Length: 84
Image (cartoon, rainbow, N blue to C red; front, side, top):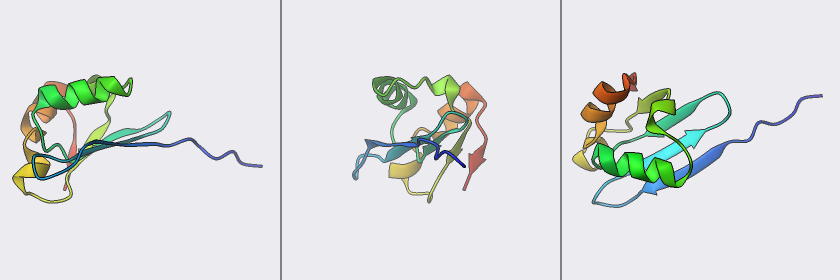
Protein backbone atom coordinates (compact mmCIF):
# COMPACT_ATOMS: atom_id res chain seq x y z
CA UNK A 1 0.00 0.00 0.00
CA UNK A 2 1.34 3.45 -0.86
CA UNK A 3 0.62 6.71 0.88
CA UNK A 4 0.04 9.84 -1.16
CA UNK A 5 2.48 12.63 -0.41
CA UNK A 6 1.14 16.00 0.60
CA UNK A 7 2.00 18.79 -1.83
CA UNK A 8 1.78 22.49 -1.04
CA UNK A 9 0.95 24.81 -3.93
CA UNK A 10 0.76 28.53 -3.24
CA UNK A 11 0.57 31.54 -5.55
CA UNK A 12 2.93 33.98 -3.83
CA UNK A 13 2.30 36.75 -6.36
CA UNK A 14 0.18 36.86 -9.50
CA UNK A 15 -0.43 39.58 -12.04
CA UNK A 16 1.29 42.02 -14.35
CA UNK A 17 3.41 43.36 -11.46
CA UNK A 18 5.00 39.95 -10.92
CA UNK A 19 4.39 36.22 -10.71
CA UNK A 20 5.75 33.61 -8.32
CA UNK A 21 4.44 30.21 -7.24
CA UNK A 22 5.74 27.89 -4.53
CA UNK A 23 5.38 24.12 -4.94
CA UNK A 24 6.75 21.80 -2.30
CA UNK A 25 6.52 18.66 -0.25
CA UNK A 26 8.64 17.09 2.49
CA UNK A 27 11.59 16.50 0.15
CA UNK A 28 11.49 19.10 -2.60
CA UNK A 29 10.73 22.82 -2.59
CA UNK A 30 10.51 24.74 -5.87
CA UNK A 31 9.94 28.35 -6.79
CA UNK A 32 8.20 28.66 -10.14
CA UNK A 33 8.92 32.12 -11.55
CA UNK A 34 10.43 34.93 -9.52
CA UNK A 35 8.75 38.00 -10.95
CA UNK A 36 9.26 40.28 -7.96
CA UNK A 37 12.34 41.34 -6.00
CA UNK A 38 14.10 38.85 -3.74
CA UNK A 39 12.98 40.64 -0.56
CA UNK A 40 9.32 40.31 -1.59
CA UNK A 41 9.85 36.64 -2.42
CA UNK A 42 11.52 36.00 0.94
CA UNK A 43 8.65 37.71 2.78
CA UNK A 44 6.00 35.84 0.80
CA UNK A 45 7.71 32.50 1.45
CA UNK A 46 7.92 33.38 5.14
CA UNK A 47 4.15 33.93 5.21
CA UNK A 48 3.74 30.23 4.36
CA UNK A 49 6.49 29.15 6.80
CA UNK A 50 9.10 28.43 4.13
CA UNK A 51 12.58 29.95 4.25
CA UNK A 52 14.20 30.84 0.94
CA UNK A 53 17.29 28.85 1.93
CA UNK A 54 15.10 25.74 1.97
CA UNK A 55 14.40 25.99 -1.77
CA UNK A 56 15.95 23.32 -3.97
CA UNK A 57 15.59 25.05 -7.34
CA UNK A 58 13.79 27.64 -9.42
CA UNK A 59 11.88 27.06 -12.62
CA UNK A 60 11.12 29.95 -14.98
CA UNK A 61 8.20 29.50 -17.36
CA UNK A 62 9.33 32.22 -19.77
CA UNK A 63 11.58 35.26 -19.88
CA UNK A 64 9.14 38.16 -19.42
CA UNK A 65 10.16 40.60 -16.68
CA UNK A 66 7.07 39.81 -14.58
CA UNK A 67 8.43 36.25 -14.28
CA UNK A 68 12.17 36.84 -13.84
CA UNK A 69 12.73 40.09 -11.88
CA UNK A 70 14.14 38.34 -8.79
CA UNK A 71 15.84 35.39 -10.45
CA UNK A 72 19.42 36.70 -10.43
CA UNK A 73 19.47 37.72 -6.79
CA UNK A 74 17.75 34.52 -5.64
CA UNK A 75 20.22 32.38 -7.62
CA UNK A 76 23.25 34.16 -6.21
CA UNK A 77 22.00 34.52 -2.65
CA UNK A 78 20.79 30.92 -2.26
CA UNK A 79 22.94 29.10 -4.88
CA UNK A 80 19.81 27.79 -6.59
CA UNK A 81 19.85 25.92 -9.87
CA UNK A 82 17.61 27.47 -12.52
CA UNK A 83 15.53 25.55 -15.02
CA UNK A 84 14.02 27.31 -18.04
